[in-house]
Image (cartoon, rainbow, N blue to C red; front, side, top):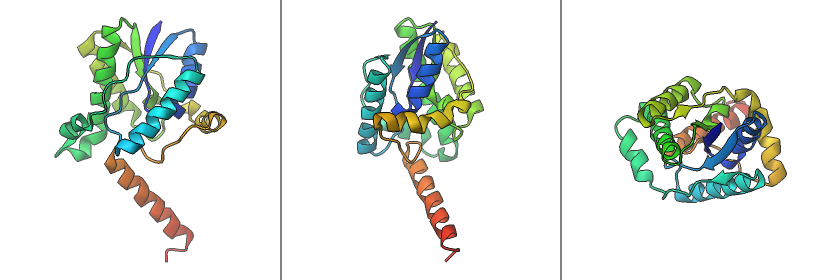
Length: 187
């Protein structure tokens, strides 16, 4: 099956592409992440994606413009629902690209992360598939998560410290601050 893989980042792409290729699928990768903020972070992730795709011998679709305005429009005043809305925004774009380029199906590297709500990702993927008329290849890939770090380190890929949006960056920093405080004995 010809599958278009939405890649949230280069490190997550590596084990997902390896598994799907081992399963006999023909793959192309697509980097669409208007949620990533700031622009410098988007560029770092894009470079890691390009390196991962190249080292994995993956074809890629042309890159869309970086337009975080679409992400902010989708979530403004609905920040508590931001992840669900973000999944929908990104997977709809990938489904449409998959349809337009004649793919049999599309999937996403978000399915590898234990930090993502896999049922919401599935829901967004299936909704996008129905709208675009192309299959969503759902597979729980979280068992592959431990492979990300060694594969990324082998290639010297940048690994991000938060999901992508400014809200997740703030939450990640708050979590790190709590851990540091806990290690110091709550002082």
